[in-house]
Length: 518
Image (cartoon, rainbow, N blue to C red):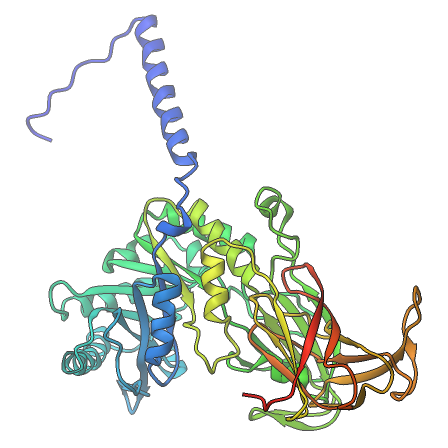
């Protein structure tokens, strides 16, 4: 350090005390700055993005709904996978469909298992070339469709020990991209423990740590949620301390885990409809429970203790095939289902702990009208706005079409097996009520001040319709034959337990509609 001038340290006792005081002050200031509580983000000021993770691009209706309800600014669109075959990396399974013009797009390329298995040996430059070639083809296509592609994201579940190699791949890719292209990666929770992560992140503009999916339960008796408030708090705090711009990746999807009769994991599906499984008469519900949020995370947030996900366990009675999933008698299905409240609490934790480097919240995955494995867009929007989820059940009766229709218009789903729709009537009003699927019907007689007891339908003054499930947005129906000479308005008592931990009880007067169901 030529040109620097050093002065000898003073020897006096006062000077030594002064020096010690300065050191103590600096250490205290550093400690306070390090542990200072970060600024809390208002929900309305927190940008929102989504991952779209299907083989088909999202419909314009789904994109528009996301923009209108959540003010979404970007979509991270899986554009294909990078595979390793015949000694070379190449893109496979390119996404099909038209690209949206209404939102910024980041094209995402994820790795196949074959590529990850060979990652130790693949030439970094060759892999970067393959990714860049796919990106160039896709950006040219986007230009023709007038879509706004602003960046490239790599989604590789790289083993933590290979983060140094991943950094080399990313730097090789960066050198091939046009100036101004935003390069980002997704991140696994396990990477947070690595000393190499900070260096790896220097190769990208920002990243999206997945604050979920840290562990897949290998046995059916393991109680491991997709996302827990405690893990969200821990991972987002670690991401903040890395001082790198990031979106916080949050989960809004369910998954289904198939185990054999001995409890060992066979397969995992992230696209199965929880309502379809709940309604299957071959599946016996053997256990249900909420993953509770820790008290320290809910005591000051007005969140119910059951703000976590819900876990349903089913056992197959006989051999069966459900949505291409092959089951054998005795197999166990574990279905982990999020709620609007679980996403709400996770988003609140992010806003409180993420700090100034937060770019926004990215939700996996973009809700679609035909995707029942993901929360509905109304549920996501309410959760991100930090508003209560609610149940709102509508009941309609159509005498001409002989239909009883029960629809959940709210953003809270019913717990499986908790729904009761009681039609309160004089005996003989309803000639028959035949449920669809796994729903059931009970004929009950109720005297004033007593609990209803089973009786014949001819004598019954309560007909109880019990859909096995009623998810947000779901409709349950039954075939209804009404005696035309009877009353045209029927009192209905609706009761269920919602997934936000609250009971729902409502009495309504329902008119019997004579016209056809529209």
